[in-house]
Length: 128
Image (tube, rainbow, N blue to C red; front, side, top):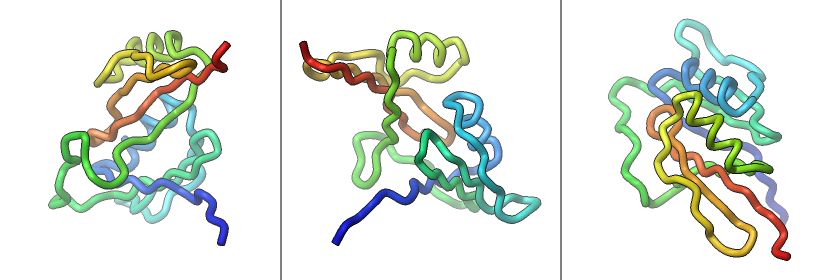
């Protein structure tokens, strides 16, 4: 049996606003909207990954603190983490953890997306 990643599914108190964050901040592309007034789901292409952002009912519990069980974060790879973090900071994105070395050729940082979503920004370089 072979498995392939199909999508990541997020829930948001404002799906349209959350989708706009991923489009404006990370260059995602809006693929479609399901439902109207209010939108039920936004579908994005984020660097080849399909992201569903579902409109959550008002009584939906907020995201829990990390670390947590289940899917904890989305990882987005960049070529230059210093430039990426400078750009995100200039855009007003909340930084949860600054750049740290995680081993030879791996540097990471964490930012916060809509509804408390945790997003890892990572740079992988070949170890010389």
